[in-house]
Image (cartoon, rainbow, N blue to C red; front, top):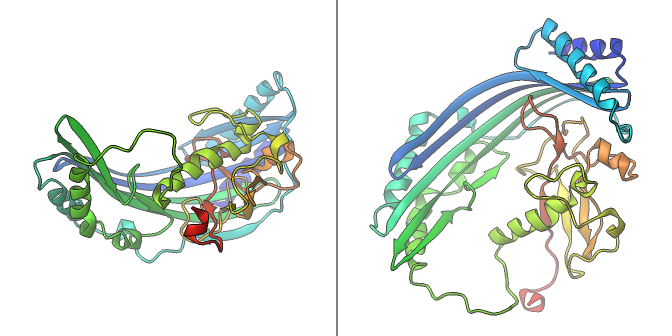
Length: 376
């Protein structure tokens, strides 16, 4: 692939680009859904393409293609340069990137069982068996189960000297059932909502989740919720279980500390941010016991990879330390805009066809030495 990446970098240089990078991405996807005892969806696809980013006259340009050949790389790189030149006419401030090292490396997700080597028949049998257990009681009116697998083989090269190859594998699955009765409906999911549990692992994740063994309990919990007493009204202190706490951390800390949202570059879905830069090192998120760490090196984390799509090596850092806002999730552009020396390596693109943006790192509430009683 290096001859392809060299073609882009050389073309960009002749077109006056101050900076250029190219990502070649080969993606394999598989998704299986069973709904109410029937096959609800089956996707098996492979894609290959590339995206080129350049900085010309202080502005970004980006273009992509699914046709990987030398002439197309020259055409797309030229197009990216023309887009950058046009963008520079309306530029507010020139793009400046943080000073980060260049790397030549190969990185791969550790895994035991390649999910794409597991037969479709075995995957379908697992989901149909789960569905049969979930739907045994007539009070269960809807069932849904799914498995999803994604492998990204990426080559990244930059005009600053990086050449990085990565193979990133992610797997996940889960199910839910809806109970109905007495004018009420309730949903119960396992092992989590939003499609289940996902990690940077192979099919061994699916085996470890014990999906089939927990289906009956999940069904009975959905039914029990129909007659459960409602939560008492009023303002109260609550204790969150871990599977709910992760959502609170994601929404209340993760998205607000994506620095592109803080700086106003991004507002999609989760909006902008209240954790603005003047609050850094002063805003209190919680008690002194609260420490939240971003770590893109942690084994099996969904955001874990060797390098981000800026070519920045994965890192670990505090977002909240002793209860105080202490850091942000950055890429090379936002890090420089915020006066930081280097990026935290959070730039990720959804496929070759999209420009990378700042994404949430693996974000965890760290354990402490206090007892449950003292916390309460």
